[in-house]
Image (cartoon, rainbow over all chains, first blue to last red; front, side):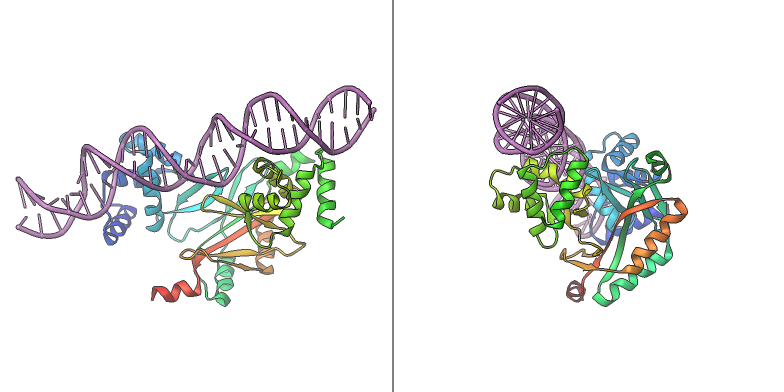
Length: 145
Length: 145
DNA sequence: ATATAATTGAGATTGAGTCGCAATTACATT
DNA sequence: AATGTAATTGCGACTCAATCTCAATTATAT
């Protein structure tokens, strides 16, 4: 059993949730998607694997996957919530172009350390962070000139 | 004329938009609100100043105020988009408690500098950033134990 | 004063996300 | 293996923030 499924099974068990075929399929679909996805995309992928999976189950499973630490909410744009797979230690954040919508991912350990440092004086225990920097990407800057 | 109104007038003029009484009222309402607000709150405040202002106009004016640099989107939580007034140089970010929803504001210049530094290698020109750190506030940590 | 393009309010519409419910099912206990 | 039961399912109805439509109105240039 792949690591992710093991973790999910453990999470469900610990919370007295059941490991249903639908949940397995949705997890598998989430794992197969590369990059960002929203609920609709996850529903499409899940349906492909198993037509019987309903949109409602997808919406109901997403918070479980988040809680289990398998996916995470990355941003909300154009009224849709985006998620992506969590890989061990491979945290990253995003630059978002205001013109073309392009998303550039970056990783910066200093940023992560700084955020932990920021929390201390507030006695705040951080679990996750989201940093999004909006602006103009290289292409859109030159277009403007 | 207050600085904010001057800037808004300039923005409208430059884009061939008209300075209507409704827009003036909505700007004034936005300026009077301390802290975070969403579209509904802004509608309430605007209505108090002038009953004739419609919800639609508030929604239509918000992007103008954002574009003019007078307010900014700060986050989206519980499916509502939050805004707050932009004051010269007084940028800040947020700690959000996952349990009680409490929002702690903080300011950190190092974070701001770091974000500019991060953009450089991508030739990305940042205009604004949003950092939200989720976790547990002091109170909610002790409740758990 | 007039022309005209932008703006308005009211209400309809959209669409992501949630909920209620009867039928089904995973799993613990015999 | 059969049973009990509480969790889960799919479906369709619902919610509600945000957007759109449209006829009436209005800010500004001429």
